Image (cartoon, rainbow, N blue to C red; front, top):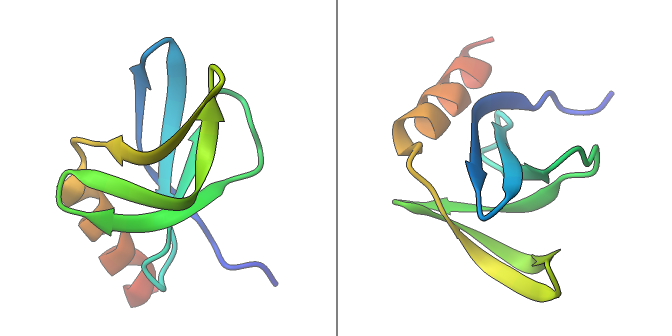
Length: 82
């Protein structure tokens, strides 16, 4: 059974739609536009570091600035409690 991913935030940036999800083990997932495949990364205050990167408009993005630190932490805590 695949581990549950909880979407904790959505936002638009640079003409793209991002969904940020978390799993109970603390992994952060980033979905871009209408993709169903997630890009996985690590959460640091104010940023998600994406080791393999995301290709957007011909450029590789390794760091995604975010404004949802509290939502990420709360989402992880809720999933751990389930």
